[in-house]
Amino acid sequence: MQNLLKLQRQPNLVTAEPGNAEGGGKAEGGGKAESGRNAELLSRPLFTRMLCMERMRAERSGRQLILMLLDAPHLLKGERRGRALAGIREALFQTTRETDIKGWYREGTSVGVIFTEIPLSETAVVRVLSEKVGERLRERLGEADARQIGISFYSFPENDSDGEIARSGMAAVSTMYPDLMLELKAKRFSLLLKRWLDVAGSLAAMVLLAPLFILVAAAVKLTSSGPVLFRQKRMGQYGKSFTFLKFRSMYAKTDHAIHEAYIKDFIKNKPDADVSGGAAPLYKLKADPRITPVGSFLRRTSLDELPQFFNVLAGQMSLVGPRPPVPYEFESYEAWHRRRLLAVKPGITGFWQVEGRSRVRFDEMVRMDLEYARNWSLWLDIKILLQTPRAVLGGAGAL
Image (cartoon, rainbow, N blue to C red; front, top):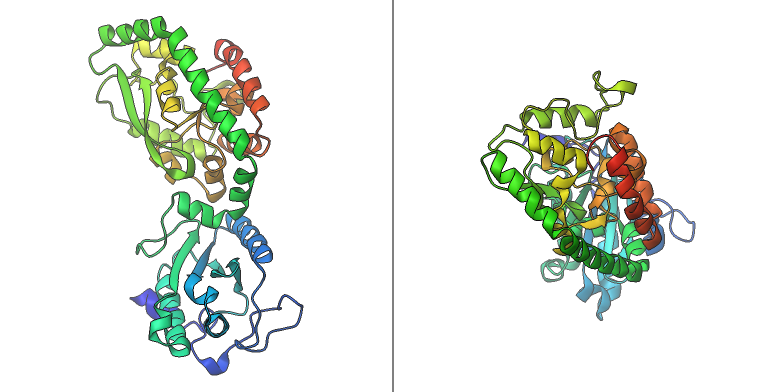
């Protein structure tokens, strides 16, 4: 409640009085808008470009941006389009700051506003904005028409203790990353080929390696008590969780606090003094007490990863891609780290595994994953798959 009162008293955040309405910056034609009635909205391409620029700026600044969308397809495409658009435009320019960016998110159906430089602690801002914009829309358009306008909010980075902002997932990602959605659409056929390669490759591997599956399962079962398979919640593409499979290499019912502490230090790029060269091994602990003797061998040879071919068949993973993080790792990510889980599915092997493996610091690993996503092609996947056996046999640490 204190945050709400505080935000309501900030005239620079929300201008409540119609008489104090400021222009919304420069109109598309270049003239300055002097009032809500005369102000122009940015075109969709320009608004989308501004959204991408502000999202990247928020990654660097550590502050958040909030995207508000007013969705009114029936009003903006019907006979009352002119009146509805004028009312929406006037309501926005009277209740937002001059520096807030206003334009078409989807031409003819959705209008958006980008609120920038919002402190992460100000979670009540969404409630204030919703109330002010809703009030102006009812005054200008009437109760019936105002009810036909859907108002939704998205934050970047995601920060919403009150549950009023759309949560992560495909819908939220596609909204905040329109540039990524265009790239994926352009690569639609290539991504279909990648999926075919995943299915064919994982089926072939499971048939050819079936005797090895049986031997490893028997070794795990006979040398320590507990299930053969280790199941763990991991974060996949767009932050969607799935059950990650491995052959169990640890004692049953172990405490994962040691790994959680290590991962958080590793993400902060704290070096491991026990490793030559000063670079910490990725996801691996020296003399981890949780690992069984057989499990240590399975990890060194990456044989514990074999069940992930089932994850590939299920469409949760790919043969090639970034490694899927556990939830407590994902929660420790900075905003730019999370981009590694957007463009491509997580994979069994990947670019950093064959190039840097466990001698690469976390930030460098993320940069390599982002470079892979930017330069992805089917041929690049094939090259990485061909280099993986050499990396497993000659590298330090498991995939």
